[in-house]
Amino acid sequence: MKKSQSGYTLLELSMGLVILGVITVAVIYFTRMANQRVAQIEVPRLLHIADDALVGFIAAKHRLPCPDTVGDGLEHCAGDLIGKLPYKTLGIARADMTDIRYGAFVKADTVAANDMDLTAAKDRFLPLLANIPIAAGIAPLAVSSTLNQINGIDFCQALRTANALPRATPSSTSSQITQIESNLHIKNALGVTLKNVAYAISLPSSNSDPVNKINSLPRAFAAPANPTSVTDQDTVIAMDFAQIADRLSCSGVLASTSHAHPNVASAAAIMRGAMLDYKVQLDLQLEMAELSVLSAGVGVAGALGATLGAVSETLTAISETISSFGGMTPAIAIAATATALSIAATVTAGLGLDSALTTRTQAQDRVKEFSGSDASSKHILEDAGTLATTIRAHAIASDAAGIYR
Image 1 (tube, rainbow, N blue to C red):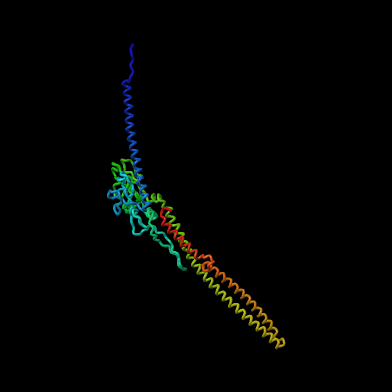
Image 2 (image 1 turned 135 degrees about the vertical axis):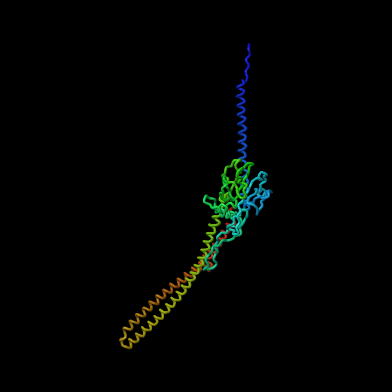
C-alpha cells in the first residue's frame, strides 16, 4: 500500500509568510501611532498641571509668578518677560517641568488704577466712595478711595485694564503692532502678531517649529490654535486676559465691589446730605411758625384795642344822645355796629392765633422727631447717618473680602 503524506505546500507557506509580514507591519505601525498618541496626550496633561498651578498661585498670592530666568526653578522678578516655568516657586516637585517655557504680561504704571504688571501684587482697585456730609449745605463728593487692601480684586482690576488693550487687525498701523509686540503676545502659524495675553506656557519637542520657531522669540508664543503636530510647533497654552478673569469669576466680583456697593453707599451719603438740608428747612418752618404766633398775638391785641375803642364810642354816643334828647340816636347805631365788627375781628384774630399755635406745635414735633432732640422720638436724622456709615463700611468690607466671598 502506498502511504500519502500531508503538509504545507510552497504556495501555502508563501501566503503564511505574507500574512505574517502584513501583521508585523501593522503592529509596528499601530505601535508607533499609539506612542505618538500617548505623547500628544501626555504633553497637554503636563501643561494643564502647570496651568492649574499658575491659577492656584494667583489665588494665593494675587499675582502671577515671575519667570525663572536662571534655570533654578525659582521666580526671578525684574528680569525678562519670558523664561522657564518656576516650578519650585509653584510648589511642583516634577523634573519634567524644567523644559516648560513660561511668560507673563508685565506693564507697570505709576498710576495704580492703570498698572498692568501681572507679576506684582498692588492695590489697584480704587472704588468711588462718596464722603458722608457732617453739616447742611455740604454736597457729597465721590472720590477714588485707596483702601489699602491687596487681594484678588486688584489682580482682576489689572486684567480688566489689560483686556481693553488693542488687538491686531488688518487695519492696525505699524506703531500699533509694535506696541503689541513690546509685551507678551502670540503669533499665528505665519508669524503674524495677533494680541497680547496674560501668560503663556509651552512644552517643546526636539523638532518643534523647525522653520519659524515662534517660541524662540523674546516676547512671543505661538498661538494655541496653530497646528499642534510634533513636527510643526510646540504645544502651547496661552491665557487671554478675559479667559483668566472668567476663571477667577472677576466679572461678578468687580460688578459688586466697583458698582453695587459704592453706588448704594453714595446714595446713602446723598440721602444723609438731603436729610441735613431738610432739617434746616424744618428749623426755618418752626421759626416762621413762631413768627406767625407773634403776628397772630399782635392781631388779637389790635382787635381787642379796636373793640374797646368801639365800646367807648358806643358809650359816648349814648351819652350824647341823652344830652341831645335823642338827637344823636343814629350815632349809637353806628358805634354799636363798629363794636360788633371789632368783636368779630377779635374772634377772627383769636382763631388765627389758635391756628398759628397749632402750626407751631406741629413744627416743633417734626423737628423733634426728625433731629432726635426728644428721647422718645424716632431719630430719623440720626438713623440716616448711621445707615450711611454702615453701608460705606460694607462697601469697604467688600473690597477687603477679595474674590472669595
